[in-house]
Amino acid sequence: MRDLALTLALAPILIPQVAWVRFRAARLQEAAGPREGVAGNGPPLRLLVLGDSSAAGVGVTHQEDALIGRLVARLAQRHQVSWRLVARCGATTTTVLQNLEAESEARFDIAVIALGVNDSKNGMSRSRWQKNYKDLIMLLQRCFGVREVYATAVPPLGEFPLLPAPLRTVLGRRATFFDEDLRRIASYQDAVRYVPFDFPMDTNLMAEDGFHPGPVIYDRWAARVAEMIG
View 1 (cartoon, rainbow, N blue to C red):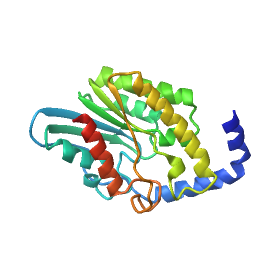
View 2: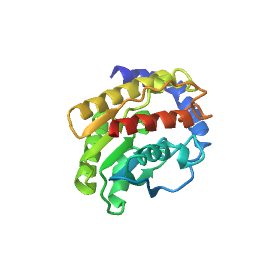
View 3: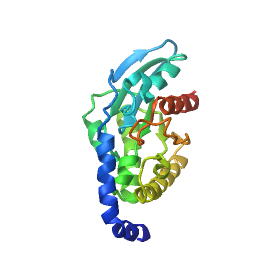
View 4: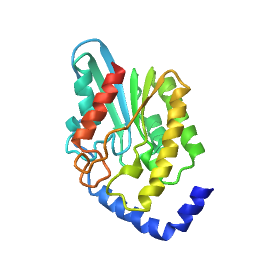
């Protein structure tokens, strides 16, 4: 209730700041390139990456430099990777659940999820966030055969350098709460592993909008996930 009261009190300041951030973020496009393919040699590994604009590669020009490209490049050193990317700007747990139901049938061994920014900044309740994420995990396991889910942390919006105050503080608190919920969900399920997002939020490492990852962060993120997958 305290956070709600604070948000309402700051609404005259937050509303134009949110519009400004959306305007800057909308200037960047999703990375170009294929969204499924096969790469590498070795034991087969079926990989699904799904999420929002960060999973879609906003901040770099081509998918080769985005999360999926860097992750496949690493995993392909040890596996024959059959991969698919399901990601869109603005995606939330709600829209991903809806879109997955329309996806063509396929089986995957591993799913990497990058969601939470839009859920937290769009005003979704924590109870809905938790239910949606649990439902998403169940859907992946039941309908797509996923054995392991790698749940990327909700990025620390309070550390994003170009977010104006007080918006940075308000979003930062919500992102922290949502991330705590995600840690808890992962801790209760053996098949779900939490992937920390503990890279420095340096303007030199981020995209020009100050909101999306740049190529260095995508590469480090992919390296972290690949190391956890093994």
